[in-house]
Length: 453
Image 1 (spheres, helix red, strand yellow):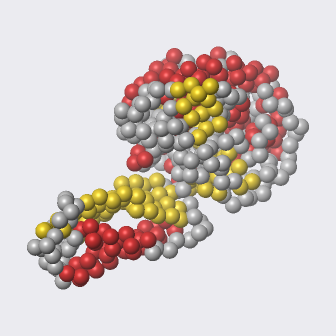
Image 2 (cartoon, rainbow, N blue to C red):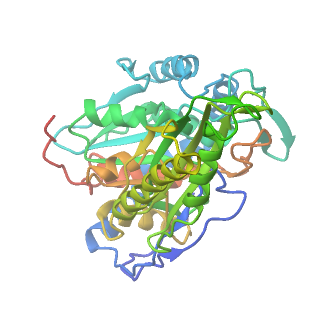
Image 3 (spheres, rainbow, N blue to C red):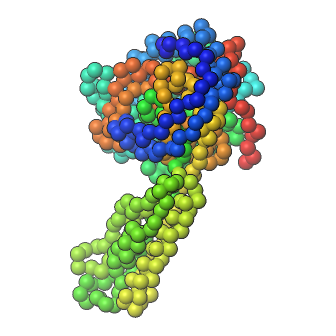
């Protein structure tokens, strides 16, 4: 249980940090410029009242007491494969646990998300709390959990993001066991499509189906005190070069090579200039093509990833890269005085970008909760499920669920669960302040007009 602080209205230490290596490898968090801010009096007062309320103190003790049981949920879910686009078995197991813990009307939606609503007393905001079901690991991966001793467990996907799923279940259990009634509604979600080419399809569906969501708190592996407020946008393309092909000797000089054309394109892409701020990046991530060593390649493919912390430079970089590809094809055809090499591009990834202002209530709430647990807040950015609400102008943050983690997206992925319940308490306190607790505090999160379809 954290030591309750004295009333706090002071300048927040919104320090910038590139989050510790090994703790956030998967998310590739980028730094956010520091913005001094004040916790508004209403936020400070709400958390002072919240943390001094006996029923909330009892609830936090229950989170600690539920830790060992929640680890069993973590083990069970981790050992169910959930590759991108194949999350169904894990979704079914997560749904069964949600129903067993009191959300009888929980269901799996048309996209494969597990969705359950815990209603508040009425007339309060609706807060989405979520963790993603999918992992980056393909079907057939050994996902057996290994006990490394001293509170450490290892398995692919155990922290990213299965720990978040287990924390959601623990919150649901303790809220229902202790009959804590929130003012606002809590929309519990285990979503699909966060990893790889999932393209945030799960979260896009959630916000298309639920037009009355007022805010989002997502759980991801992150150090104590981390608050993600920036959603890095990205576009990904599959680029296909096609030509007639031919024998490497007999057809030489008569037909262009798809691989040579792709090579020209890659060289031109490598020379594209991007701004250092906002951070804007690109890479040719994969290449393939050709049929044999003595064949002028009839086809070649590459995948291009373009990212930025703001959409305008992303679109400008995208324009330059697509132009470079077209120029490369023109040059390859001109080299042989032909017009038989062609190129086509297909958008295979579209993650909208966005930002939650650091002086918004949702960020101040997380910061005030962090201070209650002795943590300095670190503002950061990355590409996560929060990109979707941020792009819609809906306040959203990503915070941790407790535990030290590392080895993301590697077979050696691990989590140290020593005192991890403290992180689960911290993030739950953030949530409770936003939706309010009946008879204790009103909700800090404001209701928004429902969005039009």
